[in-house]
Image 1 (cartoon, rainbow, N blue to C red):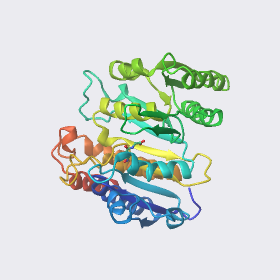
Image 2: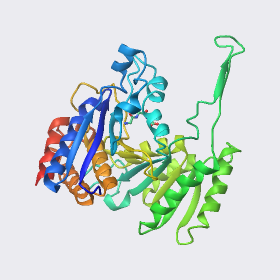
Image 3: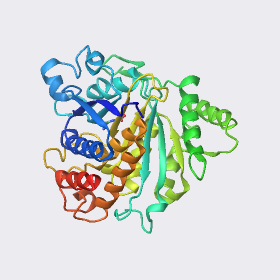
Image 4: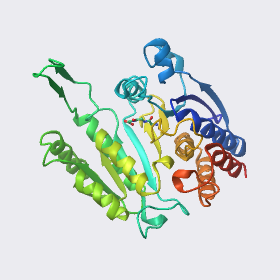
Length: 359
Ligand code: GGG
């Protein structure tokens, strides 16, 4: 918690439904500030979106870091509008820049079935799905090392390297084991595909064994990613903290929330655990062009991300207040958006949560 409990936050809505859910995230933050007695300095930025690209030929200004300046955190919506900018360009010139430049090497994504939320897995109740996905966030399969030769010819070749460093793997594994220590079960599951990807993945497995010896009070196991996805659906109660590479963590953290009702509620924290740069908080979902502009996007992923940001600041009571409000509103179909078989639109759901926060 900062000494004066005043937080400077860069707000970047991005594209598509990011522009619709961000106002609800901010509404919830403001309700929490007024109820729990802290203050906010919100600085909105109209870059890292595809409209900016259309005007300037790039997603962000060259001096984006200076424009964001010295902030306590970044609150981000979603990025991507493939009709105008190819996804790999919009992603690499925005959110992936933030993760790398700010060394946000942990992407922390909770998976939790909320009371009252319809669960697509038969016979599951809230206590059955409650785990964390810890995704490595700065290297791995998300690499720009590679090449493209002889494009458009019969001899065409594309190569892209996966990058794993001992430093990068060890630090995210330690984060996962430390997180497990805060939980009752104290268990880490690691996801790889070591039988097929025979250099990087066995390396990751070896580091799990090495780092595991530093944590004799935490148990761990290792799964191949293919059977792990099946176990998410068949036995979600088996998991406590799941740690994976950049790509595998991304996939698992979409599948997990889908098993718990909808990806629309899933939040994430891109954390720089060393505190040398700001961390970034965003919903797991993307810009969802198929539903953008319809006013039906689920704002809970954005609002839950606000709660994670407040917890990061040490505002634990405010974070708990937001979570209680989310649970209360999701308990009835009138509070829920259509992805959760509810009748509320984005603003109705968001306002109901903010009113519940205000008490
Ligand atoms: N709010 C997250 C977002 O906009 N995601 C777009 C996306 O495709 N992200 C890929 C990733 O997180 O690596």
